[in-house]
Length: 528
Ligand code: AMP
Image (cartoon, rainbow, N blue to C red; front, side, top):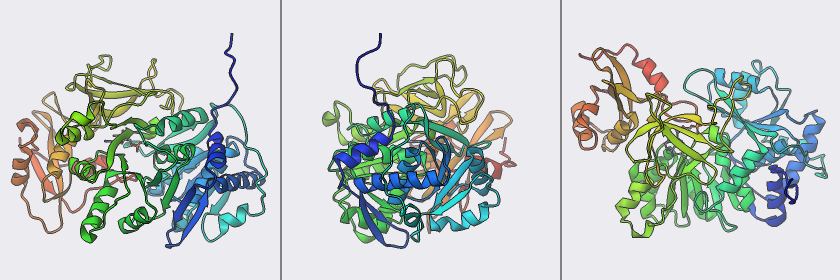
C-alpha cells in the first residue's frame, strides 16, 4: 500500500518557482569587477533562467548535458545555476584558481558542452581552449554577451521535469593526491540540503535576511546558498571581487545581516577594519568554514554581537556536515565557555550522521567521550555515495563515507576536528595533531602562518617540523616559538625543528598544500 499524499518531486526548480512567487521583489544586488552595480530580483532571476533554458535548447543542449561556469559571484551566475538545471542539465561550477592541468582534466572528464565565464577569466579561456575537447559553446557573462544571448527568448517555457534522483550539479574536489574527483549532486539531495540549510541552527534565514556570501559559487556549491537563499526568499548581495574595503562598504550600505566565508577573508577584513575604524553594525550571523577559524577570530566577532559559527563540511557532503549552533545551556555559560564551544566544528543537523573509528583499526568505533580521536566518517541523504564515473562506491557496506578528517566527538555531539588523516604525524606509534601545533604557533604574535609536517626519523618513525612565515617586520627565533608552544602542547609534540620561509604553498581553494610542502622538505634530515 502507498500513502495518499501528492506527488511533488524534490526538484530544485521548485525552489526558484517559490522564490519568484512568494518573494518576487526581494532584491539581488551585484557589484561587478569594474565597480558598477546592478539590481535584479527573484522574479527576474526566474524569468531570465527560463530564457536561458530556451537559449540552451537552441544550442542543442539535452537533459543530462553538463553546463559549466567559470565565474565569481553575481546575479548572472545565479541565473545560470537555475537555467542549467532548468533545462535538465548538470551545472558544473569550475574553480578558476585550479592549475591548468586540473582545469584541463575536469572539463574533459565532465564532458562539459557549454561554458559560461567572466571576462576576467578570458586569459584562462584563451590558454585552455585548445586543451578542452568537449566544450562546444563559450558564452561570456560580461560586455552584454550573456544578455544578448538570452534577449531573443521570451521566457515562456517550462522547466524540464524528471526523476528527483536525476543529477543537477557537479563539483570537483581538488584532492591532495591524484586527479580531482567529481561529486554529482542530485535534485533530491540538493533540495533536502537546502531545506536543512535555512534552519536557525544553520544559516538562520528569514525574509528579512540580507546575505553577502563571500564563499565563491565555485567552492563546494557555495555551501548551497543559491538554493537555500532562494528557498527562504532572502536578499543577496554579491561581490565579484573579495577586496575587504569593497565588502565592508557593501555590507554597511546594503545592511547585510548574514555572511559566509573562509577564515582568511575575515583576517583581511579585520585588518581593514583596524586600519580604517570601520565597523559592521548590521551583521548578526557569520558562518565560517572550509578550514578552522582561530579562537581570536571567533572571540572578536562574538564580542561585536555576531552569532558566529563554524560550519564543517566537504564538497562530498554538499557540503553541510555540522555547524556550531548555540547549545541549550548557552545563556548560563561564561563567555570563555561559549568560545570553547565555538572553536569546535559544531553538531550535525537532522539528516547527517557522524562517527569516529580507530585510525589503527577502522572496524572499531570510538566512544563519544571528548577524548578519543579517530577517522571521521559521515552518512546521510546529501553525502556522496560514488564519485562521478567511478566504478565502485566511495562508501562501505553501511554507507559510511571516510572524510579523511581526524576528529573527536564530545558527549554533547560536538565535533572537534584535530587533523587530516594524511597530515597527522605518527611519532613512536602515537599521533601528533599537525593542526594543534599550527594553531598554537599561530597564536604567537610574530607568526603570520605556520604549518607542521612529519619528517622521517629513524627512531620515532616520524617527527614534526614546523614551517613558519613571520609577520612583516617581526623577529622571532625557533627557540622562542618552541617555548611558546610548551604553553599549550605536550612536550613530546614539540617540533624537532622550526624552519622559517618567505611563503607557504597554497592549493586552488586557498588551503595550505601539505603535499607541496612535503615535497619541498623531502630531503630534509633531522638530527637523530
Ligand atoms: P572541500 O571539499 O574543499 O570543502 O574541503 C573539505 C575539507 O575542509 C574538510 O574535510 C576539512 O578538512 C576542511 N574543513 C571544512 N570545514 C572546516 C572547518 N569548519 N574547520 C576545519 N576544517 C574544515
